[in-house]
Image (cartoon, rainbow, N blue to C red):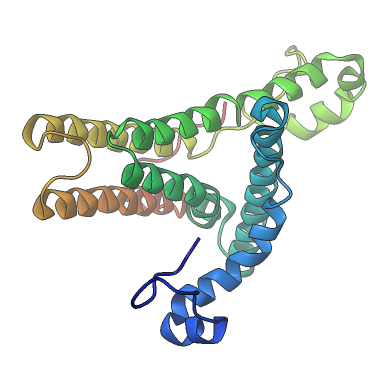
Length: 251
């Protein structure tokens, strides 16, 4: 790596000169330095056919994502926000920004938009199918095991007051419904709008990404507005806005 200098490309300037000429770049470098040192422990791709690099990097990203999500949850708690509001704002931002930056890098470096958009759809599919499916499977196996059956009395005492509870029902993993149906419905509608915009851009602009300044900025503004709309509607539903339909009974 070499910083471009004047003339014949001499030695890079010292850190003091770098901090004076590019204060924001130097501040970003200082903030990223501990993480760079941490990920410097990742084995090179030539070791074990690249699998060692893949799994070590995957564990590192998982640890950092968990740390960011936990800090975001604590921040929402300190601000007095409801857990559902914290989840769709701070926690969602903290855990999704790495995917955002990865998609941005792919959009800049790749010739086609497949990597950028595929990263987004692939990341969300992992969140839905693995992030929800694996914990749900583990909990279901636990309650179906003898150890879970031994806690039947406490389980029935906990849920006996719920409207869906019946003495004849078996012990099982239970998650009471709340505003999830409304939030998922809003997300589905807005996601379909995003996909329709991408298809329309391919027909009019010639590609999902890029194009002239007007098309780029208008699409970015629209997508940002859709995200803000989703946040506003979800928060309004959680706070019990009377203009929105009431939540269904727990099931």
